[in-house]
Amino acid sequence: MKYSRDEVMQYVAEEDVKFIRMAFCDIFGRQKNISIMPGELKRAFEYGIAIDASAIAGFGGVTHSDLFLFPDPSTISVLPWRPEHGKVVRMYCEIKNPDGTAFLSDTRTLLKKAVDEAEKQGVTFRFGTESEFYLFCRDENGNPTLTPYDNAGYMDIAPDDKGENVRREICLTLEQMGIRPESSHHEEGPGQNEIDFRYSDPLSAADNAVTFRAVVNTVAARNGLCADFSPKPLETQAGNGMHINISAGSRDGEVMPSVLGGILKHIREITLFLNRTENSYKRFGSHKAPIYVSWSKENRSQLVRIPAAKGEYRRAELRSPDSMCNPYIAFALLIYAGLDGIKNKTELPEETDIDLYTLCGEKAQKYEVLPRNIEEAKTFAKNSAFIKETLPVQITEQYLKIQ
Image (cartoon, rainbow, N blue to C red; front, side, top):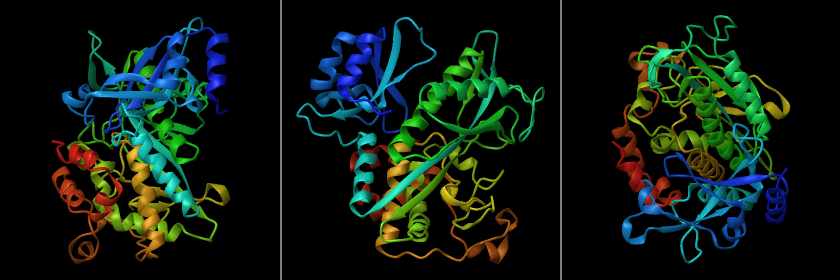
């Protein structure tokens, strides 16, 4: 249910809410928040709550450091792990400059603009994520280790799968927050888990992805564990991906082939923003993580896979992103790439229904390859006219500084 400002004010007054967390992300997708008391909520809606932008990566220097958070009432959610008496609620926020204009490095607003542009062209996008993470033990001092919580394998069950109850608690917590997980299971790596979400509109899907990471980290800590979303936490084991399921529809007819054509055309240019750490590139090319720019039906060695599904569940799965990305930027770039494909009637390349992990020699040379490291990804992004057209220069400059 989407609440209005007045409904949120009434809910806070009547439901024993004592703290309101105003949440937002930095340009790299790390969630931040500031808590206010109920008496400050009206001011927050009308005038915003000031924050020091100079202390947040990519938000500005000390000479122009004031920014204001304006809560989005439609995103209110109770935090189930906080006390029942004296509730804590969270709302995602828009970030504005002191003069009321939109802050260019607010990636949530960036995604909203992309959605608006798609709607102007009569195109509707939907996204769903499949996020993988490891559960590691903590040492006697409570510090994280790289000791997996179990040694189970793909879709194993208890007692080998020790993460079963943790995943259950995560899913139930998400349901209490109005988020619908589709499925959960143990993944290939020891201590590795996956939870998949039902598709939704781009903004809700991005909000849910950010919320998901917070819930997983919180539930893991409550169980004496550490959750790790990094792309390759264990060198010899499967990496953590955040597969993005994409569907697009148009009032003018079928557009998915052109959308996918646009995404494949620009994928190397946008990889820096889908895979923002050096560790990200250690994942590519093994354990079902892609390396070539290709697509196929069902084949899990491909960059884009069309799963075997029918009707409303029909979609395309992009397999290169990982959970360290900012989902607002990721979805915005995928929308713009898809729109570019529609505009230019970009055709899909020939389907590649082979095991790409076995390719070598001349056969491999016919395929474009994803960036092999973060420096190569930076070069593609820096030289991209598409990136210059779609991302604020302030965001691109910060990503080009990543070490």
